[in-house]
Length: 213
Image (cartoon, rainbow, N blue to C red):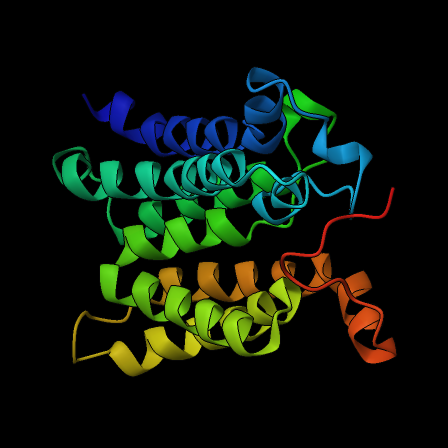
């Protein structure tokens, strides 16, 4: 039993990474007979770029599945991990692993998406209020400014802040979780570097705008 507990965290984190490596933008597009999202628009395998194909159902399915693969490993550890010695630190690690898997998927040549939906799923797994707060921030910015990238950047910055302010209110702050959220935020900003440049230049594509032929 003790030997299992020793290696179990590593197995769980690795499983989270492999789950995160499932690029649902590509998988859903193939199943529905759509163009590979890596060949048009921003060439990013994510829900926003799938939406640019004009198929809202495919985009919604991609968004949901990308979020679920971040949420599922976190809540499974939360629900069943305690008897096996898996605490909040492991929850944070497995969520971060799933997120990294989306960014650098082993099944798709380590070329993945930007991780917005998966990060939101991880946040929901850590605590529903945290996920809802970050998701609401994304929706609010996206609605008023019509830039998915700007909404993602603002939500990424505020997610760790929401977690800190939630300490003692809705959940107890854990340094491992805060570290994981901060790392995800930094990765989200890094992955949106090109978008930041286009936002500054005023050339960033708006939500709902189809790619030019």
